[in-house]
Image (cartoon, rainbow, N blue to C red; front, side, top):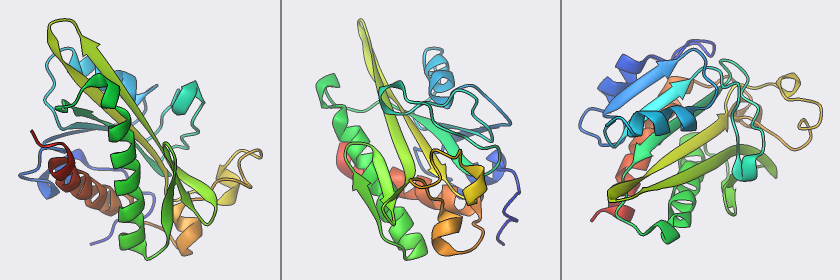
Length: 205
């Protein structure tokens, strides 16, 4: 059953829906954090498994490409990062960004029957406005396998007034694009399912 638009994410329910997947084998949901990418990086260095996903209902220091600030309105979007240990050379890390952005665009298009496209290298666009951004950070470790932290920020139930004045003409949300509230958790599960499936196809050893 669909959840109300303002319902919080439930880590146990998400994990249950993703049983058998690599991406989503462990799910954490926080009420607030500074940056999910930074938190997943810390957890990776202490042995967190590949496929760990960390969501937050509010991100106080979210960032996009080139350190740009990402607005993360509490309870309105999907702000999360996940841990990967891909079998690729560090110089090929842009492949990860392209894969995530294209998978996100495809999932939006399929799930809501609205056209989403990728604005290279890391933005997802709907109706000529930005709906999501991707940030991938590859960390190389001397004598250890490198790992990647993939962060996604997606505007879900934002209304126009939820965006700062300087973004109101250039940003959009799923709710604005479809004309109604969105079940954030249901879409989070659908997206993680697509990411897991396409990751295996694109980056399996």
